[in-house]
Length: 166
Image 1: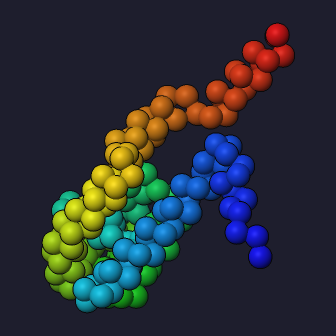
Image 2: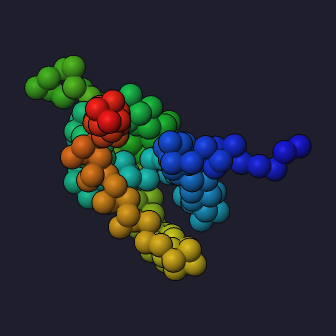
């Protein structure tokens, strides 16, 4: 078997793949940590639980906007939280098409425990940043901002046009 990492060999054109892979590894590891601490919150649902804990019930669309995640992803996550009895959904009495998500008592209790666990996670991730000599969070913040300002597609098109002119 070849031990070479094909995606790593492909360079920066596959940055999104590398970020996704690192993200998946983090989510899987943190999910296992949450389970080991007796939390029923799915790793991918932690931000949703904390948002609802801090800001109260809200619609799927608002959750998606606040977390900057897709509407279908939030629907899937909400269903998992409902299945775990951490949240409930109901129709908005003013707009029956709108689903409102609220944490249950158990969901709020789990959120409090998650906040305590997050302190340990933050310390561990900071230690990794120190180990690799790179503050990834600051870099990701700048990356997201730059990509909102000018997406890769626009940058690549400009680069292609500049190459054609030469």
